[in-house]
Image (cartoon, rainbow, N blue to C red; front, side, top):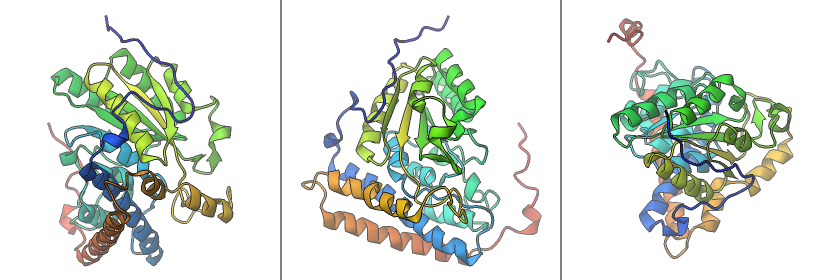
Length: 343
């Protein structure tokens, strides 16, 4: 019989957890976190421009506005831990440590890409840093991540997993099945629901029957909290508690993080479901990078420090684009490689 720990109910709104407060993060940790958020923003801003040239194959779904979620989660994980991603996966990749040059080359369909140009934007993966892959299947990550979590529990190596799912994907039956299995098997996993308000063009208030997604997840018998997904420190603290629970045998947790994507569902989305004024207001008041700057301890990190990080991010992304454009496409003879795996 599986022995389960006592579970906590879900709560709505921002929640202070029992984790070490963010004021305990030292200067290096704060700069590292901001660096990753800044890299994501610069990467996505540049892709927004590059996509208009017509040189990028396939669809692109930008992560701008949600940077604090990916980084707040992944700063509590090691390279040995695993994450499962979504179609909006660039931010998750960068937060988990994927190489910018390899990512950009992959998006341009080049042979130097992390998946040799065969995956593109929606299928970037890098197992060397625990990135199981971006996933074009809506709600596909939880069922993969529980497998990684089961592996960690079976091998007793301290490895945990986290899955990212959007508010629209949270309605998928596979997500419910994964949550239930995680509770039944007491798996070391954190389900991260990124609630950006829209499942493609359908509002969460219409498509999700429960008052909030965290409450629905709690009904499976796990702790579940809802936090401000534009606040790195709120996400970080919630994930610190959830990851500690997972590593010490306490089982799964769900974190619902509310944020706002700045661009359309995909590049080219006319966004008829909201106005340009609404988006402009979100950029002004719900910017994760601005929130970080206004909340960070100025005695540890100065505005000049953060400005230098932003400048370096732009330089690195410029270099990544130049390398990707100059790189070769995969040779024809590689067409059928990496299609089947033999055990």
